Image 1 (cartoon, one colour):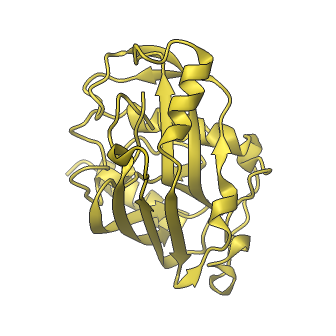
Image 2 (cartoon, one colour; image 1 turned 30 degrees about the horizontal axis):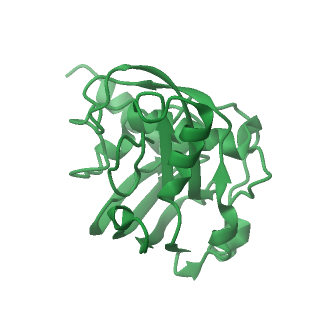
Length: 247
């Protein structure tokens, strides 16, 4: 499979359940530089950085197209299948969009800038070498940038990470029209992986473009402005309680 910003043969995007560990909440003045993001060598919540990329892809292919936040984005769709310590945000494939999203405090945030995943659901990727080559091909010749609350996140080009091989389960009616099943795959790419933000309003602005001189089918440009509202846990709990009250 292959995709993330374009749709080539078959390309995917993952999640899973996270571990509960103490979390670092950033103050507003500390955001917007490398101190706001996890390093590639880190293991947020006890899980290796590269394994969170695999989990992001599993999240992405595990949502039916009618509920998926990538296309026809809404604030309500931003909450779909968010059940771990890391809050996953979808990529954007073309154009420019403002995307509001309310997130409980204490959650890390992960969003792709440029990424690809390939697996054995594609008849052309039936061995590990083919899968690895396919997963990386679309991530070349990219220009990526991101700011958090107006401050540039530095050195994003150095965050490229390849996963190990993993099993990925494709849901029915997924956004890639891939047959339902579990396949062997691998992923590669660049992500913004934010540490938990302070309660309040934040803006994450990401830009990606690809100009591939040898494979122009990979080319695209996109820009997303995520208006993030980080809510106190007490407020989230009150909203849940109000929703569950019987009239």
